[in-house]
Image 1 (tube, helix red, strand yellow):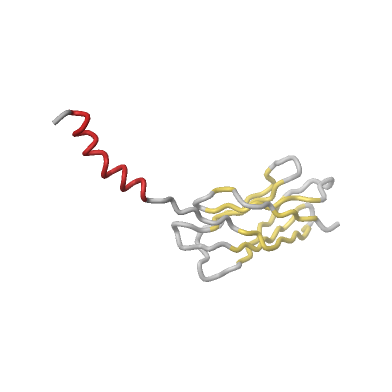
Image 2: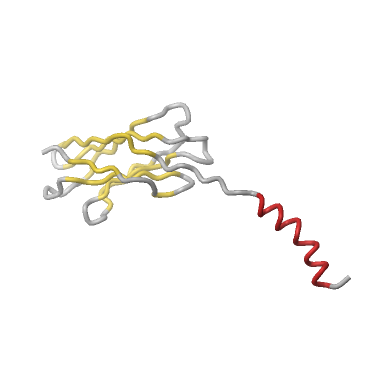
Length: 126
């Protein structure tokens, strides 16, 4: 048997098997709402997320506050899945936002997709 044909026969099943498996693309987390409350010189930001958490393999694992120039002003890590608590709200205190900034954006992250999905504009109360 020719070497190229033997290689073809050995690789064909693996190629067929891997070619039939389609990667599961998880949906991004959706930011349903956000609010900010000023505490002295800093802010407490609360964000409500919805995501089809399926457990440790796919869950919303964080969100961040982004300034108008793309600078990250604060990040809230989410340490576990929320399969049975949807939507859910978590807060981050001690966020420093310069006085001249009137609007920030909130961006969500998932364990499978990273930072993705639509950013949520948050107008700061003054």
